[in-house]
Amino acid sequence: MENVIRNYEDLVAQGYGQGQGRNYKPCKTIQNFSSIGRSHRVQGRVSGRLHHLFSDLELSTFLLLDWNQNVTDIREHYPLNIKDINSICSRYQIKRVSIEYRPYTLSSDFLVDFGSFSIALETLYSKDLNKPSIIETLEIKRRYWEEEHNTPFKIITEKDIPRTVLENIEWLYVEKNDLEVSKNIIDTAINLFAEMKQYPQSSLITFCKHTDQINQREIGTTLALFRKIIALRLFEFNLEIDYRDIILSDILVSNLIDYENKVHATY
Image (spheres, rainbow, N blue to C red):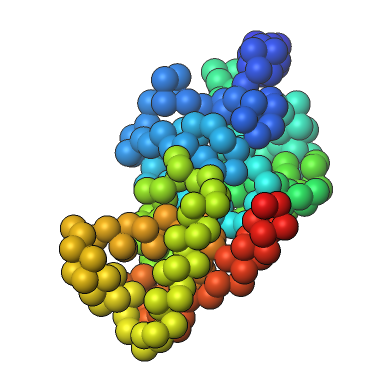
């Protein structure tokens, strides 16, 4: 067992699984771990750093978390302490982790902070849920988090991902690298809102096309502007409705009013 413990301690000593926010270092990265699925590197809105994801399901879960305003940190591929793991195995007569084990292969997909509250998440395709080896590993992880660290543990499958919500977030995520709320964008949103009030039953798509045409702009210009404003949360809508199906009266502007008041107080 000494080799395993030393490997884990070396991993921690090198900073893997350590830190928070921008300074967190996942124990699995695309450079040091090969994936049988599709790998993704995605810039996080919450953390401000690059996240390493090893399946489309991990990506989908991450996007939902990263859009959630209550989430304060997302740490992917969080390593599990080998001493705690083997203590669990001993107590419940589960086969102890092999001496060939490499620490970064036993981690939780996500450790997510909601302020002072945290939850550990495991992503798994539903077709794999009945595999004995998977069941055992999940049980070890559940006991690790719930019994050793007093942290809720939840499994996420593709069936838990709301398709329309995810597609809306993917559409909005294009704007992830330019999310500064400026006076100019607030003024633009205010002007758009004034125009929207004239056509409350118009669909967003129809309104945007009409606005582009009367202003002799390339089709798609106004829709891109809406996407930026919504990504900034100055406008909001129910993400369970496809953005292509919403009408202007579905769009809420309470955040815009708050920002407008702050700007007026500043200038």
